[in-house]
Image (cartoon, rainbow, N blue to C red; front, top):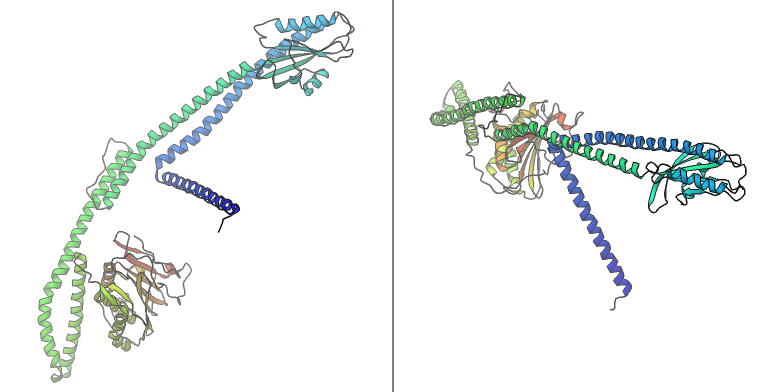
Length: 585
């Protein structure tokens, strides 16, 4: 099929428009990047801001002074020229009046020669002062005899405006500045006019003085002032840069030193030069760094001794606990043959040994996390059976305290690469705490998943968390109920261990709570081991929560998980309706 020329031209025009759009898009992108780079430099560099402000302020100040000076010089030159021309004009007017006194009629034969002689005399009387000056005499042509006479002979009519001619005709001395071409190139002239009284009528005398010399002098003055101003502005900018550098350099050194200190290089110090304020700053900074290093080393040593003591005590207690456990199991098995009081003592002994063994297990797990020996055994795991298993194991405790455990889990498998033992332990701690603080109200466990993450929320409707307690729930040995009158009688290490398990997975453990509205904990884990979390498939703030003024932040929301560099991050969680987990490092 043949293609018409109209189709070809339309295609070519479309291609040209597309090319033009691409060019403009590229230029716009380059301009945006340039502006962004300049803005970033402006925000980050104190020296650039100081120098720029100094240059702008000094440019405005020097520019204003330069304009005033140049304008003043120009006005002075113009006033001098006007004064000189006015004196010559009056002298010339008096001389012309004396010459024309002898004539009473414009038709006198000698009048034309007298006019010519007067013009030539006035134009050449003092060649040094009147160089380039044009003198013209004109009058109303009553009888067709008097015409405009000039010396030298030029056409000056374009430079004598109607307004100036009318003012002189009215008997006034007037002047104007006109630009025109008399001898070749266009020149600016100062035109002065004066009436010359005679017996036969009024004659007008005009002086046309070129202002080339004045303009050249004014231009030289403006150039000199401009060059001086530019040099002064550059000098001020250089001076501001040098002074700012003297102040900014120690600050930059202090910032770099502080960054190294924050990175763990505690032996970094600033160089102290001189005895001025900056030297005092450096000395004070070094003293502060020394004190911080001493305190940090002391705290690290205390922490190391504490971890070692916890680990040693936990291991050392294992052996006597095993022996006591064997004897207690034997007594517990034979309790039916004892007196009721002895049998009850055997049951209490067994229960307390269980609690003691649980405490030792938690202490050993904490010591492994502190020592960095915790290992994650990830494997593809269906979390639905894990949730059911945790609910079944805590069903007895929930029944005793009158709490109903409700499940909201998918009917299809929810597969994620996790350590099932650690995930089950986290859920057991969360559900156990929810049952313990549920105030005989239902506890809801929800399981959700998207393409990158899985999440489990545990919601209770108990006493909730008071303002500030959301910052304490993950602390070791912290309990919301100091009386320890709860049914489970936990060790206070469960949520701390759960936090470490979540961090080991690269996940988040978050808490929300409000007084009288209960609490909700959310565990978010990456679906594939090693992936980085960005969102959570479940809301942290329950949909049925009544938020106080200010949103969930006032009700107590805490997001805990790994920061961008893998360090533990603690901060306020996401707002209601926002599924994005907010992690602060």
